[in-house]
Image (cartoon, rainbow, N blue to C red):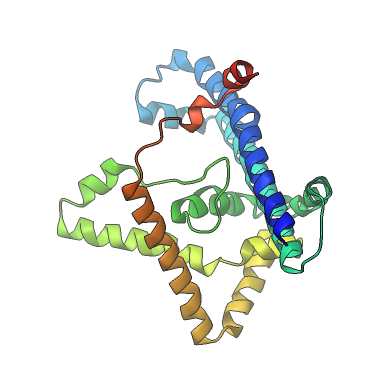
Length: 247
């Protein structure tokens, strides 16, 4: 049991390093190349950058980045959830074997629901930042200037609360979707339906326990972040030059 838990930690550290040094720089490179090639259009402001992706090439780039990012994130979840499943069953495993088998779980992406699936894994889960964390996008926050402007009015504060309720509600509603997609090898729509059926079978007590666990996680993490100082070394410091200097 203890060895299996250590293996899970080893994989997380390994995947984090690979993501920061290889996978993320490639994603940034593709995005930067596209923006540089369209700089002649006059990309100066954020809205100009946004409108630059509404061309045919821009849409292809967005789709490529979406699928590429989704593969990175879902594969990480696939390996971790498979390891946890074996850990709970008290069955020994090798990291390499689980990593190899976990590629099979990605076939659930061969479905028209891949766009919704991408929004869930790349937006909703990082927004909620509870339980499902990944190396590529560990967290995502609504920009401060948006909430800052909204907080100036009473109706704006109500809207802020509604935004929080919306994405935390969606997160809670789809809580078991990754498990169905990975352990049952289902697409997003089928996993959502099975997830909803499972919710209907849960007793009220079980639902309260789930909500209590998520609330406690949120409070504890928030308090820890408040008391810990800012990181001296950030993710952007870990690139190919860091690897070269370390060697």
